[in-house]
Structures are given as structure tokens and as C-alpha cells.
Length: 152
Image (tube, rainbow, N blue to C red; front, top):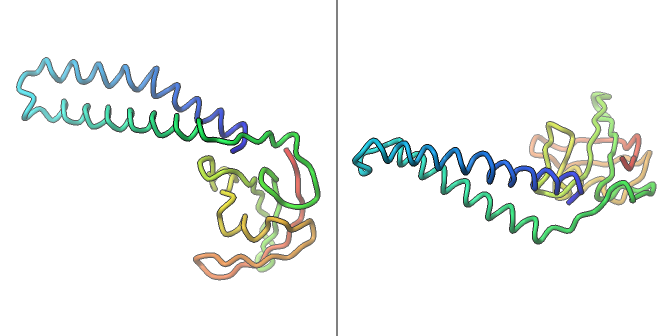
């Protein structure tokens, strides 16, 4: 996992513990004041939210505890590997795309962060600028050329 991905998970845990947890406790307290809990939808919804929050905190803390953090700023090289930011051009449409290869937990394709285990990442790892790659994607095979490999 990248250092920024680690910090993002730490921040999510912090928000869950300092904002979400107290808010759901207030909701449970308010719902209890309404009386009969067996037919109290607000109470049951708040308890479900509380269970989700607690489960998420446990899962995130476990993931952080097992994470191997890699400082991308200290990496370099001409070949694509974990942490690299790669600019690709679709050989059919000439559309350029820029991706950073990150850990599974921090992947967000909309933000240009793809999982190291994604089809595109698996196809480009070990390749260099100028190499052409074919990616077996769910929508069919796509061909890309690697334009740039950066370490940002």
C-alpha cells in the first residue's frame, strides 16, 4: 500500500471513531426514549448502523496492522512496477489515460488509481516506455502503448 493510501485509511478510522460513532450513539439514545424497542424502526436502523461502523473499524484496523507501506517517492526506474504512474495511449482511439498502480484497498479508477491486481496493471507491470501491451478486459481485448513511466 502507498503511504497516501495508508493515511486515507487512518483518516477513515478517525472519522468513524470521532464523528460517526458518537452520532450513532446519540441516535440510539433518542430512539430508546421513544419507548417499545421491538417495533422501533429508528432504534433498529441505528443499531444496524452501529454494527456497520464497528465492523468497518475492526476491518480497517486489521488491514492497517498487516499493511506493508511503500514510499513511492523513493522508487525509480524505467520499468512499470507498484507505485508507478503510467501514461497509456489507447492504440484504437488515441485516448490517453494516466494511472497509478496502488494496492487493492486504495484503488479508485475514477481517480486514476488502479489495483496492482487489475487486468491493466498486470499487463503493464515489467514493461517500459514505448512498449505495446494487450489487455484482456471484460469488454474485449484493448491495445495500449506506454507513453511515460513516472514516480510521483
